[in-house]
Length: 69
Image (cartoon, rainbow, N blue to C red; front, side):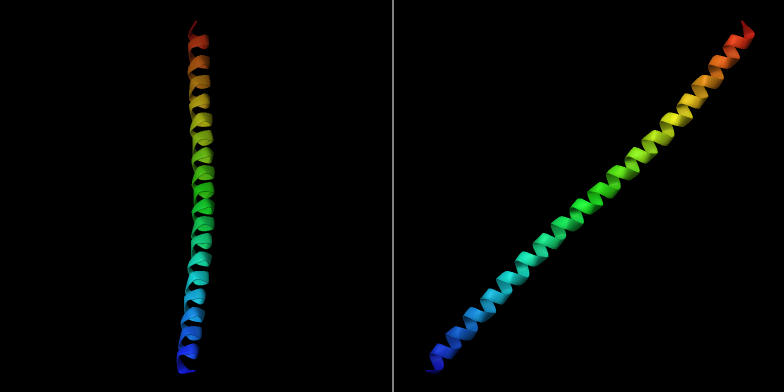
């Protein structure tokens, strides 16, 4: 009878451990995905900003060359 309880608690402990490991993996994947999305949005925003600054610089250079012609 003691062995039945020991194996029962062992099975319960293993099932809780497996359930805990599966939840942690899912949360870390979600965290990875959200961090990836944040990084991509920051890179896109920075790229857009650099493009607009470059475009403004090109426009000002074009206007300078047109004025001198």
